[in-house]
Image (cartoon, rainbow, N blue to C red; front, side, top):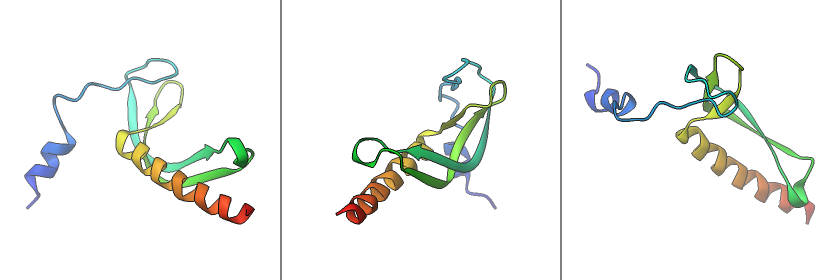
Length: 90
């Protein structure tokens, strides 16, 4: 038996359809992939690879955009990655 609340939560009928940031296409496919984040400032030239991020992939241009849940994970992981890199510089 499936939990009806999680099914309802995932398929929210009031959620606005997302559009591709690059080409404005409404045709997106949800996928889980590694999302690279290039660091700036004192850490310029370094990159944090965030594994298993939930992304929307545009079917027309291939642009990858994190979902709101994926963006929260990226933010958490980049925060930890910055701390580790700054610790190694000192």
